[in-house]
Image (cartoon, rainbow, N blue to C red):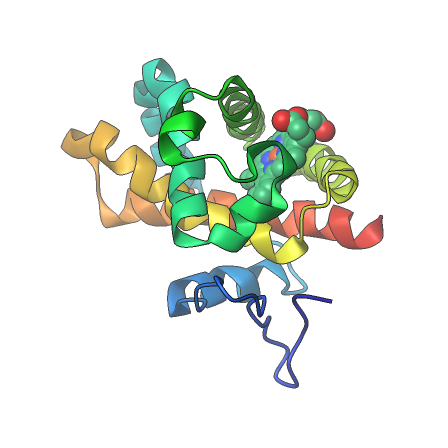
Length: 189
Ligand code: HEM
């Protein structure tokens, strides 16, 4: 198995020749995703998420695509595991209909979660089932929590005027929640 728990309960990065070491921020994302209690999104964070999502509406496709290109750039092992994009250059990926379509699907999931911020039980169900399906797509559980930090870097330039540390932390918390349930689904399948 490529990723496994160490004796401290930490996830180990996949040991492939082109794998990048997991940064402390990523390790935090991974650790949070496997704690027993799901992360809680506070009311002030919900407001920030709804406000920034409204601004992001026009850039959804771009943000989703850039998130994945950043993810693949920083973790080539993730790209290699992603069958449809194996071996494509950045330029090819930017114009790839499959990448855009997956990016839009990810963003549609984010939208569903934003629309259900006051119904976490509903989001939990959607995300757990989505995680289960990702096992059919051969996605490794440790790849899911890598998305949040890349997404934050992708949206930042679109939210320059309203960006704050609180907003960053609200988005990271939402992605921790998504990772938490998707990974539960992946492990369950
Ligand atoms: C926040 C994280 C992610 C979300 C919300 C997400 C969402 C989705 C959605 C909604 C689909 C459509 C099919 C379905 O509903 O079952 C899908 C398909 C797929 N996902 Fe993800 N995904 C995420 C992360 C990843 C990652 C990290 C990878 C691989 C490295 C990946 C690989 C795939 C593949 C191969 C498919 C099938 C092909 C396709 O539909 O484009 N996903 N994903």
